[in-house]
Image (cartoon, rainbow, N blue to C red; front, top):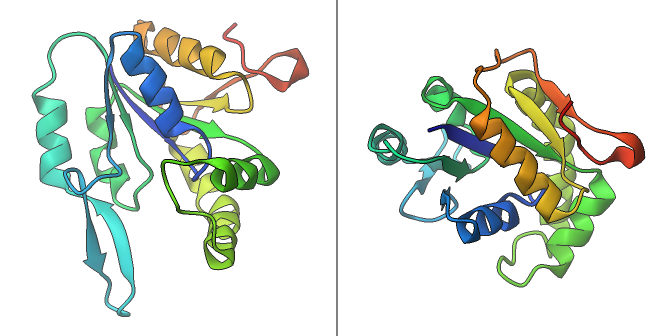
Length: 179
């Protein structure tokens, strides 16, 4: 039994990976809904889409069988890192992220110029922070089946990796491969 956080920028493939994991019989929760997240007003008047920490904590505490895969990229997710067995960063180059958000039909975010600029800003500023605290990183340009296979293998790993010492999963051609 493992609890895996799948994180990354918009367009990295978190939701796609979770749908495939669910189709394989795993419990998969995308936290990008009102059930798991809420808008918070910051001191400067701007807003931030953050986890409902009590709801996500209850989800993690209540999970006792099989693997649980949770997807999200929220500013407060680090507070719950100790409750996860793995924190896995899905990463892809800017051009891939932008192409994916432009083509997706299940989420309108990323179609406007200001949203694309925000994605690029997050890629430069937020992704390095995620990388520094992830236990593993998967090249999300690989086919979905390969990404999902790597997530499943990480869930089955006997050892918990230390944050700050990520395992980078790659092989020839740039696609990930577990050693």
